[in-house]
Length: 78
Image (tube, rainbow, N blue to C red):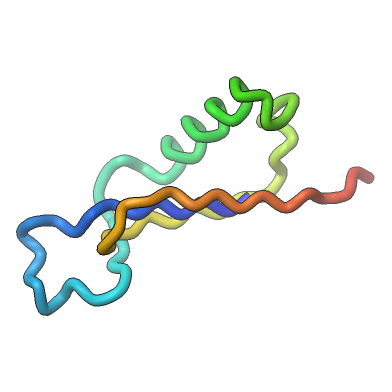
């Protein structure tokens, strides 16, 4: 699973810096974002249990358009 969270640029960010994505190194913590989203996807019955997720990456950015991107790739069970 790959998660990407984008927050709108801060008002304090100079307009000359508002090009592309800027890493967000402030709260909320990436692990809290991932856990919350996995819990929501479980409640929506996207999967049986979020314990099925065995690999994930989470990115946090400042950007022009606020958004959450979720990419899930089905793996093989061994």
